[in-house]
Image 1 (cartoon, rainbow, N blue to C red):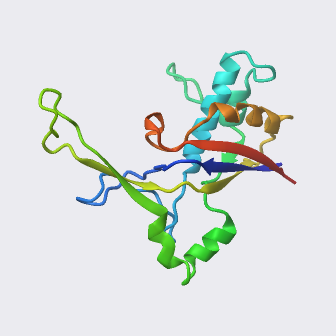
Image 2: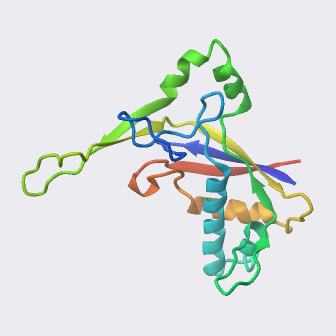
Image 3: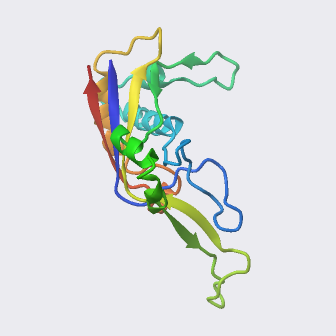
Amino acid sequence: MKAQLNIDLKSYWHAGGGRDAGSVYDAIVQRDPDGLPILPGRHLKGLLRDAVMRAEAWGWDYFEGLTDTLFGKRNPVDGGESQQGCLRISDATLPETQQNWLASKSGKGLLPGLFAGLYSTAVEYATGTARNHSLRGIEVTIPLLLQARIEPLPGTTLPDGWHERIREVLPLIDAVGAHRSRGLGRAVITLEEEA
């Protein structure tokens, strides 16, 4: 059984790939080959894992052992074996019709409108002036609707009711991407089951 995550971004967001743009930005947005923004599946998987782990730690009904079942068990410090989970999460991208149009000759001209820049600097407390060499800039993406697919890994069986458990923890995720604790990436995430 497959499902689709809908990530409705409500504010600027940044999902970087560890690259910069020289003297313009210290961090740029991760893009697909057509230049469209993406939110990596590994990031979404980490957010979902954390939300399920918290629900399990708080004793929510039907969550006991679910973190390891869905997302795997990390290799313990004592040298024990790690265990593979049973979920695969794709990168979150724009809906297919929007991707196709923006990748076309007619839509390419609008790509720069998907991005903006945010700048910050450190201020000297005593003088109230900008600290030398402290200007930092990041590229951000405008609010958009993104979609990602969740499906079982080949050869694994998902536990009954996994859709409901994921749906229950989604309100625990209120932001995605980098700088979530500084106001970027506010999002509402929903889950739709697929046949």
